[in-house]
Image 1: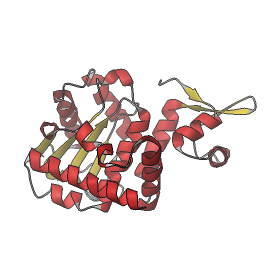
Image 2 (image 1 turned 60 degrees about the vertical axis):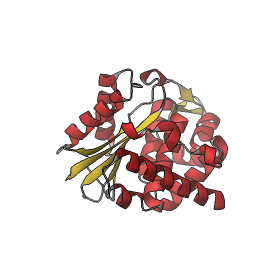
Image 3 (image 1 turned 45 degrees about the vertical axis):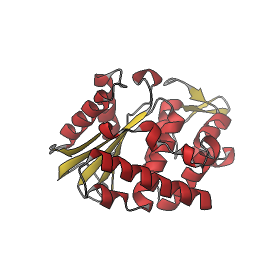
Length: 242
């Protein structure tokens, strides 16, 4: 999968864009691609990195739109379509982390991922997270970071999952607005499509509900998990109405 290439139609379908829009982005040099003869070729890893960076840097309206389109195509909008119960457990939440640096946060989040029993290659995940942060920080405004590997390899995990960590003190993590971070999600997905869907879902939960404030009010893993479940249900209802 990491060496796979897409033609124009395949890349457009993968990114949920029209072929015309994608061709325009390629012509302006706004998305990585190559020309082989008279056709455009898109490399899987480059396209995925571009999509993740675009999503993290998108406006709320753009994230809403992406979430609606991915949900409509790949996930039912019924209550059963919730991904938090499928990808998270209370024991995969670690409050009160004592990390004080970006490097120590990444290491502890990998330790938490390893504790799920679903991680097959711990060192490889750690290296991939570090490489991803070198490209562009996954920290967002509001004290939130959405960590994820640079590449999404099916063999790396036994199943897709998400873990959550909270630090006792705010940590400089490279947020674009210069603020510090204390809430860290790590998404580990076997499938690139579900990775982008999970990323959009978490963005919606954090931007459209009071989730971030509520997460800071308790350190009980079960209560934190219940807050996540409730927040996702709000987002699903919002998406159903739009």
